[in-house]
Image 1 (cartoon, rainbow, N blue to C red):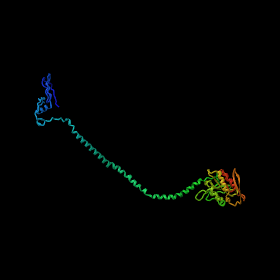
Image 2: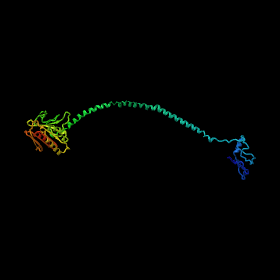
Image 3: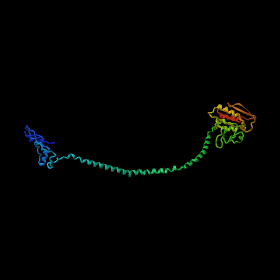
Image 4: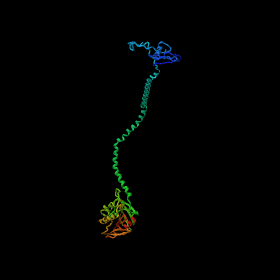
Length: 360
């Protein structure tokens, strides 16, 4: 592209005005300042001739080129043509790309060194601190492993099995001592325990805690293991009948014998008991009467021979209805009656009245 310079002081009127290479000059018909135009060609020629100021471009008349002439026909003279100088000021930033690459490599290298340093610090300094604290728990489980390896602990379990039955039997007997509840509402004059059931035959040989008269001594029957005597066992031992069907109606905790000593010092035997609260009273009375009155060993309650038995009759004592059986020998009779749920049986009428008064 051609560069044109206008000098206002050199303007000449009516002088041809250059338009460029290969173009016809234009005449300037108006009066005005002289204007010189500069082109790349004029600048190059000025540089080659050594002129200080570039010369104005003077267009040459266009002449037809001879045949065979052209860019390929006439070689360029290297001395007559020089390449224009290019200003590289704008390209001074191009070398910065390698600098950035070097800076990136330096940052990566520094980062890698820092990571390696932190890894080494963690492995050689931080990790040994935790590694040294772990051996303590590792050793403790090894010491705790021996306990599971001691199955002999199962052997002591065998002796306790044999020991438990021995301990359970006394535990069952001792609770039954306080469980026994006397049927007497007014306590008896004396109380004692007997390992066997007292009958009329053994009545005279029993050692009583007190022989005052008149008096009542309550006898609680217990075997050698401390078990309380049941109602069926006591009744069958004295009267010889089968009272097993009444066993569940009379709990053993509320059954006992008693010995009455009269004014004359004679002893008579008796039995007191109370039925369960859930047992129907009327049905129990009827079942007991059938079994007891049909028993063939009623004379077993007496210490001496009572003679021949008579027949059962109804009676009433201290406002309580009762049944009694008289024997042929004078002073021998059996009396029984119910005071609510409490049954009283006695081998003498005086003993029956005294016991009945204490249960009411």
